[in-house]
Length: 286
Image 1 (tube, helix red, strand yellow):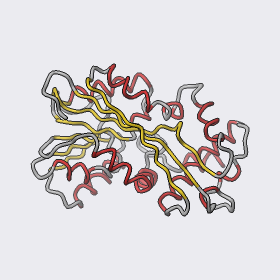
Image 2 (image 1 turned 45 degrees about the vertical axis):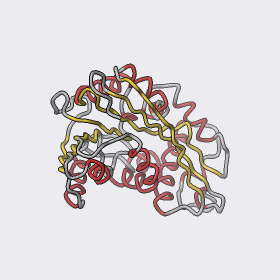
Image 3 (image 1 turned 90 degrees about the vertical axis):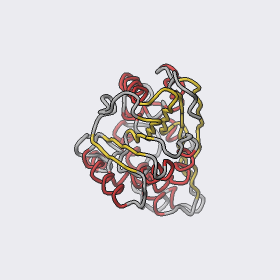
Image 4 (image 1 turned 120 degrees about the vertical axis):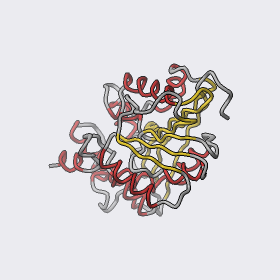
């Protein structure tokens, strides 16, 4: 029963991928919107550019991207999940923006765009679903569709900075330490700070990066409590199933008395690394 509960929350039917359903993608975005906006603005997208949102999810970044490129720019978006594409198309149609926005279903490993189609690509919270070989293939595709001198920007979660207080400060650290011992999704959540090197290996130049610590303190907003409460419950359920040491009981139920996020001193954090590289062969994009 426990496995079924945690399997049901956050999974997208058409892909079978966890943490990709509209309810979790939008909850996470709402919880971290100010920091996400800051990360996007630091990339260097300019008015009039053609920009691709690669792995757009439900399209939460599309209004911001359209705002950055303005009425002379164009925004394209692609996502693997049909459900997400439907929501993203609706969100783009309802947003008040003058920029052209096109949303398609497709795979980052085989992007349906010609070479040099874009001035920049933005890929957020997506590479965590790719194994190492797929990540290299996806970065090659992102480089291929961006013109020489254009930008490839990748942002993803750094789970090594995840912490929940009050409570055992090593509880989640130990979970991800064990996860790092074998291939899989949890291990890929620890790969974000390797992104600069992976971009350089993909042939990008002038690579720059920054890791952002996103912190939330009590009293938590409903969006923060909803996302992190459910996320902690899912991790705790997996830890229990694995027989891991530690007291996971308080994290299993987001509404349980004594849950850290309900505590007057409650605290939760996560890390995000943003890496940006330039496609060689053209004038500098920045």
